[in-house]
Image (cartoon, rainbow, N blue to C red; front, side, top):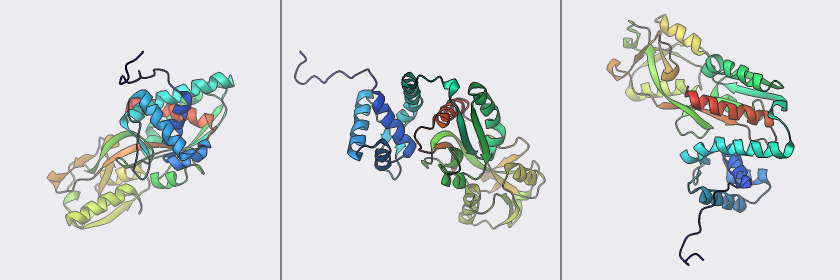
Length: 295
């Protein structure tokens, strides 16, 4: 018999039901809403999360913030937990993943939609020929607002730690001009930016206002391609994610008298709708591939 004060040994058998609670919480981001989706009380869901964390010996979700987000350990566990849930569901449904059918509506920012996702979606559709993926590109905030209505999955960007979705990669936001151009010396500073309401436009203009640098809009485009063309022509200075900036542009910074800009984070958000096997398969595939490549 164990001594009275000896802690019980930690279980090394994962509880599938607790993993499902964890997965639902991360998808929805709220104990209250997740409890409704699982047809359980909020206290029961909270207690089950505590049990899972005790089983694994790590904290999996951050509590007390406006929107529940997974910890670093939780993010590490999530793909494996979802894999175990899929295997469990497959065992009881006796359905091969190849036989899953349906359609998935994927919204994405331009860089991913034009340079990254086409090849990945082609690969995914070869693996799952009965799943049809519809890809559109647009503005992060607008697509996120229509998650569940117009889109099943959305890849967007926001401030680091925004909690909009599962983090994929981080990148600095930088000023850029054509090589050899002196456009950045003009005042007011001519800018090539997205339309009003776009995140990078707001970050750029607010940073210039705080630095006391006069500016004007010289070129507006909804596409990165259009903005890069204007900057390369010497019409204006642009603002881009450093991870995706064209090699034909020159990065500017404090040495050229321009203020620092925040760091951005690409994220993947999913509509919290149960029973969407096709969406779950694409989500797991993208998480694995995009995090592996860190684009």
